[in-house]
Amino acid sequence: MQIAQREGWVLIALDSPIDLSTPAGEAVAGVLAVFGQLERRLIGERTRDGLAVKRAEGVRLGRPPALPDDVRSRIRAEREEGKTLRAIAAALNDDHVATAHGGKAWYPSSVRAVLTSRP
Image (cartoon, rainbow, N blue to C red):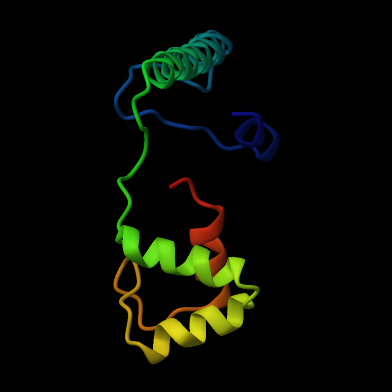
């Protein structure tokens, strides 16, 4: 609204009868914007509180692991043996081990992601 006012053009809300070219219309739009921001913040709080309750109940949040446990174990074991991320990725590619989401190849960054993810 401030940009429109500064540049001399008017916003038109097609789903609302508010005339933003008048002081009263600007005031109504400002109030609506404030309540929109309030609602966004309240939704955020409710979401955080709900997720905290689920975590406290021991519920695992997020997407389920797409990588089989044996591949995760192999990556961790090879890293514990001292292999580099690049060497682990090359070995996985040589053995034609499928990536978690159907990627064409393993990369050091994808190996790191497995190592830093929760089991």
